[in-house]
Length: 175
Ligand SMILES: CC(C)(COP(=O)(O)OP(=O)(O)OC[C@H]1O[C@@H](n2cnc3c(N)ncnc32)[C@H](O)[C@@H]1OP(=O)(O)O)[C@@H](O)C(=O)NCCC(=O)NCCS
Image 1 (cartoon, rainbow, N blue to C red):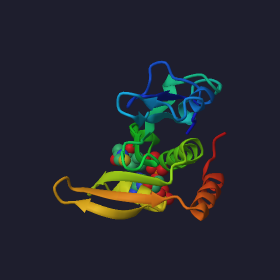
Image 2: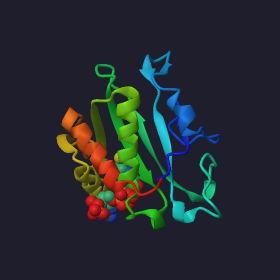
Image 3: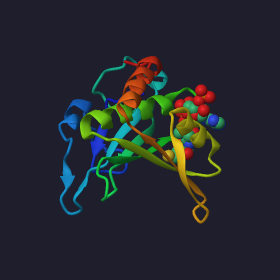
Image 4: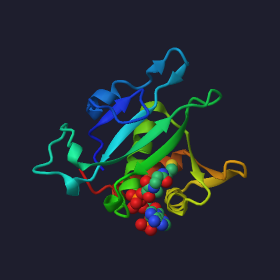
């Protein structure tokens, strides 16, 4: 994954992506009409699909394969972030991109927004996603029979934060 592009206050990739440096300056921005912090989106690039030389800050649309989002949408807990991930390009799946993308997003969210709890809602038959979040340390906290959905959570304690950074050092392969 290359966290070189990101868009703010959108639930899908921006057509005019901002560089991460710019995005960091948007931290703690709030949508005034809702009183919520804005959602954050990273576009996932598969470097193997980059045509020519990889250049930081270039959108490299030819290599866009998915996105990872967080939503701080709990009125009672503004430091809770819901995570969503999509690796849309089939040929880019199974290469560790989702795991790496979520780890980077979590590190960004902890540092930028002081997030202390991550949550994901996953279809109960979505084995790939359930395995993915389980591998990252998320535990099931509830299950909806109506929506056929499992909620998994990862609280961020000090030791978990250190463990996460260790995992990032061991997992992240792209610079
Ligand atoms: C789920 C999804 C994000 C996984 O992306 P990915 O880049 O292929 O995942 P990774 O290569 O990073 O795999 C990480 C772990 O996820 C699990 N996993 C991934 N694909 C899997 C599959 N097809 N079957 C079972 N487990 C799978 C494994 O535990 C894997 O770890 P391992 O390789 O050490 O065994 C991708 O399949 C996807 O976008 N699916 C559709 C959207 C979706 O379900 N999003 C989640 C809702 S939040």
